[in-house]
Structure formats: structure tokens, C-alpha cells
Length: 82
Image 1 (cartoon, rainbow, N blue to C red):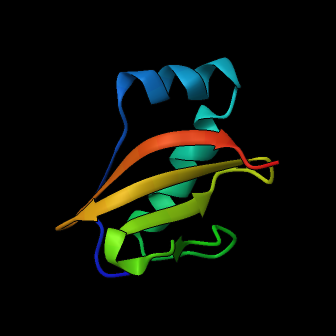
Image 2: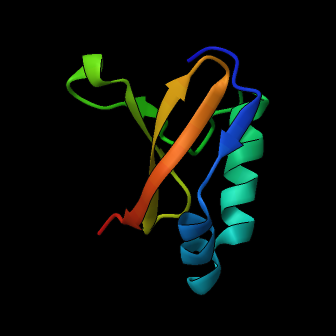
């Protein structure tokens, strides 16, 4: 995936994580991404690959979608993966 130095989320996504009590797991996933350790995250580029949309696992139930710009991964929707 390349070197990611920063994972950004909006206030809305932050509140979503807090309300579902998964902020700690999100922070852990973010740290793994920044250290290029993708173990357990199931990090992958979504189809069509030209859209530059990535997904990664926060917990077994929750997944985040993000776009990559330079060394920044910008998370937009976080949802129930079920």
C-alpha cells in the first residue's frame, strides 16, 4: 500500500466510533497501518481499483472505507460489515 503517516477521520466518524465503543480498536488499526503491519486488518483496495478506495477491518463487525492521498489515509464511512 505504501507508506501511510497519517490516518484522518471526521468528527462524525469519531462520534460514530465512540457511540459503538470501538474507538480503541480503531486507534489500534490506525497504528498498525502507520507501521505497515496489516496483520488482521484485511486491508484491500476496492473495485474498481481506479477509484482509489480502500477498506480495512476495525473489528469483526465493523469496517472502514478510506481514500489514500499521498501519505494520508482519509476515512469516510465506517459501517457494520454484517
